[in-house]
Image (tube, rainbow, N blue to C red; front, side, top):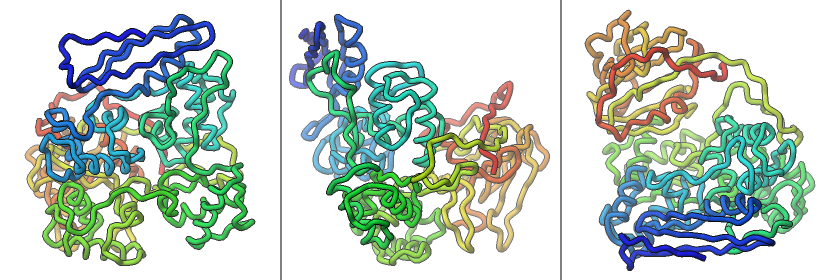
Length: 555
């Protein structure tokens, strides 16, 4: 083992993590250079057989992130990142890592589908924007990191053509796509951080590998990922507990509580997931386990709480058409409790005024609510083989500019229920009244709507691209000069201002995306990658040579 101490590092803050790996006919040298806010690790192996193992272990080597008891700028940066994510930190941004910061991390981790340990790991740090992305397997890669991915897919009942061979080829790409579809994720075949967390193959995820201090021998079997939840084929007490929870929830279970996870249990899990309005896969994931009471629910805001998490909840209630007396003030009092009761009543839930897991799910406070994706097969997962569904597609112009100047706030409320039996067909971006609104692409103003009594959208405008794709902006307080009917505009040009005209209880932009001029498609998926809510710098108005297009499922 070789350890090098960086001359610029203060000794009290050094926390050196080292590993010595040995295997048949090979030795491994590990060089660790540790800093106060990150770790550099260099590995050298004497045989090629070790390279894949070292790569996998290096992704799990602990980094030096702030931990409980620490003080200083690194802690302050962590707290600021949590607050920016809508997480309340008891005590505020004070640079002291105490129980308040730990609890805030737990809340953030629960929302991201991570183990709520309260400890900052590489995945948590990345999601907070404080560290680079963990190493993720990619097409063409080989080795233990791919083996771990393939094992996780297999554990999730997804068939990998070619088996667990440690090679990321077309078979693995297809399996990843099938898995993403089954979990309600965008099916790309690429392992992004959301997919990796769901599969449990990154640091801090539910099923993540805990690397041992010894590398496997050259003849050892491929590493496997422990599965926290029962899966089809299991026969044990964990399955029996699952079955009892299903029966208690009112789900009929063919074969009864016998401890065997077969097609009857898969069908029962599917029925439960459908009842809960989450993606119905027949596979027990963390959210399903939490809804069944098999795993503890994430920490949720409760009465007397204050802070950004409460404000986020209040904004979601307002977005859902529920009035919150006093507005989104970040204080969980009787007004917020009454608003939750009204929302629960509208959703057919027991009206308690308490933010429970199901209410949090339905209002969008935690992710997981199922949305209907056109073209996705609804074949029973208990009998279906994992194949890719053929879809009818439409080419569509994508936004190149985020539609609102920051600061602002938004979340995915696609298909959320609205008054009169309607469903929400846009994304609501909440900002102060008068905030500039931008053309998201080059196009023409083809419709202008004026506010009037009974109007839903109030002042609204339609921007249409050359291919017919159009973007609908609603609830404007005013239209900008140069954005009249028939005007040609360029991406980044101001076309209006945020307001609350029409059926709106708070200033926000209602934004819709209609690929090819057809039915609305979830706009959250195309504006989230452009998220500029933290930016107060206006975009440039330089027109691109061509508008970017993509292929989206037709409605």
